[in-house]
Image (cartoon, rainbow, N blue to C red; front, side, top):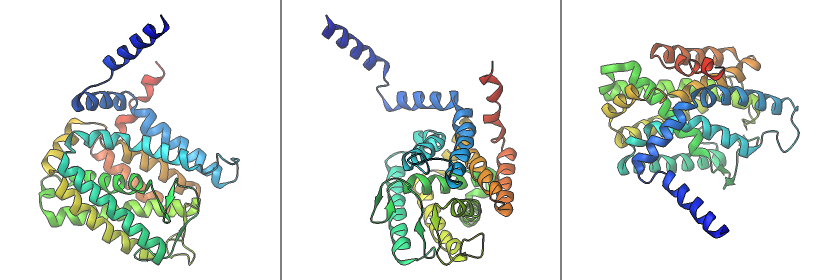
Length: 293
């Protein structure tokens, strides 16, 4: 009798699980849409508390700078972007994202072991499993950052985005601006350390020169992998596609504010203005009243 019950439960679970890619995409979109506030507001706010408590020595091991929790929180905040672009990610796009992933590992390996092109640095906290000095979770940190900048620029540029030179210049500038927010906060937390220091909140200017190279490679890869018009259409129909950028503004804007890094805070605010301008920032906040009903 017990075996029959277990078999029936297994069969019922299989019937409820999506069977096709389209069904999985629909299920994942519903999951993100129903939890937008939790993903794009609660998680970054929780991240601020945990990361600052870790940096200030208020959390005991193994909770302080726990690599698993950092990766988990990052993955959750990235989920709106991943789910949003999934319907457009065919074999060609996957191949170019794969190539960009290999580039990310390669350039980070070069940077860790030679100091080129970002400047000499090392990781100061646990960011998950490490192979040859490079975190295995690196793509989940790097690729979404560039893609958020890419998508925001498509929205802000409008028809001008069809011009390759304009698109490339705008996205590179946006990626650099995101790193102006990210790196000072990460250095203040001790995520990574530049032994020789740097002119910009402890970050050397060589880091930003390196990001020009990486941003250029990333934009060229995304141009080859995705159809720009399809991305714009997807941005119009998928209201949560830039929620990961909302998380970025909250998380790193808040961390920089704690450490008094006011220029990075101001740049984070500019991204917030861009999201408001495109009617993106306030949408997750609209979910807040519903949580209390």
